[in-house]
Length: 385
Image 1 (cartoon, rainbow, N blue to C red):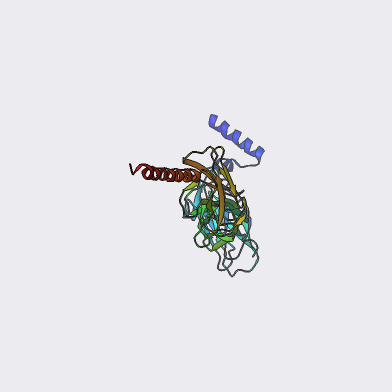
Image 2 (cartoon, helix red, strand yellow):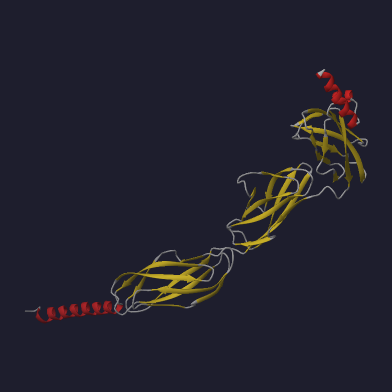
């Protein structure tokens, strides 16, 4: 009796809903299978590959078969997931990693091509329309752009350029870096974030910075020099050139004409000392001022107090006149000589020996002569006795 009442109640409910009791008991709940792509329409250059990130979901775990149609002749479509080529996925509430790669032959004419991805599983079949536009301008390009096209530096010093490597292609690329410069230069190119690395990865649509360091030889002549950096990836090669302007190095050396750092002067007069100023740099040095720091009471003057210019590698003589103090006694003294310009300077200490006055020498000789004469007179005057 009770079961009869239940059947009657079900019949009444089915009649109200418009569904037969048998259908209400036997019809299963359909699986809601979905297939989507965040970017269903892409543009590529002929010969490139278009990649679609697919999302396949289902309320319950469902085995889903995948297929593609509408591919033109010569085109190749491949489903990939987990690092493998796949023919299907197990869909669930969370979409598995899945891409649909389409290889476009190089000879493909520009135009728009329609493709369809079909997913079938759990009693459902879903189609996703995709579109590939082939255009010669769609491939993008890779560029190398230095922050400054040219830098200035003295010879022997390092300069560093920051160079932007931009990947505007639809493909992630791994680049090998190479650099070059004039003979005798040291040039290196490295990723700004990875010292000593010779390769750099740049994702599609991203940029990376490269440090290019160039060091000229110490004796490099003034002028402009070109250095280059090159980034190479499969089927891609870009190069950038920078200019380094060498302004020359500035260096002076002050010494004596015979390289001896000692001299002699007389206590009762002036003596000349010949100095030599050499430009050991690679650029001219102008306005070299000659000076000296002598002991107290001494005087030092120069025939040419200012040397207008000394060319790179040249030497110029500087004549100094040294006058000791009236109170100077025989012995050794130190005089510091200097050659100073805005670009460079040099100094040298000269040990100066003061000899007794020549007047006292004459006086001594005279005294000796008088003594001898006196002795001779004495012998002549008193010798007979």
